Image 1: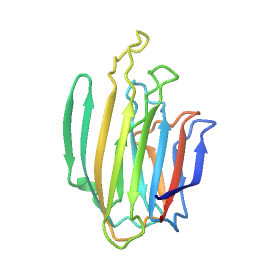
Image 2: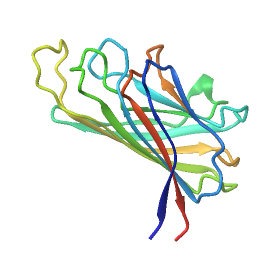
Image 3: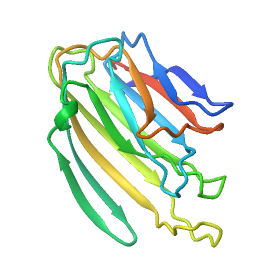
Length: 186
């Protein structure tokens, strides 16, 4: 049975644009867990962008397959690369709740980086959820939504840092939390 070790946890006490984890070594896998809300003025919030190796290693290509399901719809989104941004190693995963949602509503996400230190391309799995709401104070009604992501970062460098920010200029609000765990060999 693998052993999980908390490497770092950041509980925000004020609005923050970027959260970064550095010096990621000594484990077989990494798990990032996020409970987040942002300042964007809609109920569904924003994509959370993950920059891998923001220390200058930006030669990787990135692609993904995303599947989503809600009480009103389901579908698939396939993006083999990010076109003009193909030289960057990043991925976007929807998870944060927006500012027009009730203040107690946060989105959640778990991202798994298996074999993150190997010299092969990195396969990354993610799941994110936005709880459903039936609240007359919200201008845009939103059903509960789940996303599943199968990602590939086409770079053979070990992942040494993970930087997270919203896809727009919105901040993560106070109360959002970001945790990273290392998985030790059994």
